[in-house]
Length: 395
Length: 114
Image (cartoon, rainbow over all chains, first blue to last red; front, side, top):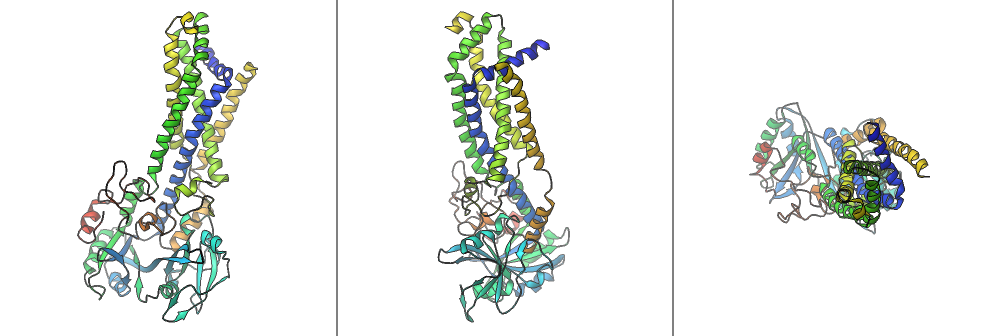
């Protein structure tokens, strides 16, 4: 046992004996693992935000469809849906798209009936929009930054409807860390948003809360309401349930998993460089070193153990430093550069804290990748050299 | 010098490992006030946002699948990716396979999906 420890310690010496080789290996590992861990961290953070969105939302979401495309739902349907057995509450909601300002900044306009607003709220710097003569809105951080808006600011008329043009007021700005989806949001009362789009008595979707266990039955009953519900031709109702979204979340479809595949490809391409550095470029000195060890009485298995310890320490060090660097990139640099790739529509320096979560499984995976790459670079060449005679190895 | 380095290397490695473990453990700690604000926000907007997009400019489905039937840029299956929407990057689209069997069956004759 003592001898094994002694041999293992020579593995540490081997790292220090060839600093250039060791640094090259660690740097190449960092180049692979840091973006990989940052990507996984962002995906996990996004997944957690999606979970909260799912948990805090409704049980069923009803949309209208005509000619195979999404269309608004008449508010007359709300009463009919409320009568369905198992329905606890129905809230009409408008979610629309708008472009604001000279630069046509993208905004998502959301309207909820003022009666649904909570009394107190801490996710807004300012206050909730109040119903009144002037339409009030709470805006997201990215929108506020790009349009130079602040709490209390007045927005010149940006829409026209049958009642003419109106000035709007910013009643607050969302706190930046509440969600990445607040960035381009413009939130107001249902009536205010109705005015913007000039469509009275219509909602884009109905958010339904059901009694536990009644979701399937409610879905079935609502589908029966489909035909002729609108009074403007046949309106088909399309329903998305929480259960469906949970399936989607579990499969990781929306966390841009594909990007990891690209990272994997990148990882192995750069991994080849590690193999070259540790087996090809360092071949001469490794051969000479092994030759000397063999000449002084070392056995092949002892040389392999030494090489194994060297690889293990290099990959462990590389993985650990990668975790620290990934954390710095995500927390201190706020995902600078990579956030724009990961979250389409966000600038490379986001105006909100990017959601991230570094968990042990990706970290362990990173270590395994590092170990596999380093080992494949060292063990094969070490073994090939260790099985020949010392004079041939040193030649 | 190498002997000194051989003593210092495990120490450095241990220090870095402790940092890394602390970071990983931090991922499990609840961020009480932040999580409360997140839930408050989502309750206010009745559940909004699910995917990586932060606006509705290109792919509504990628922003929130509750708001669209599917991705409008679906081009059909291609090797290694289900569709060509840049907002998904090789991520699979909503398909009948990814939906719960009951709902997929029920909606199939209502609205055309991918």
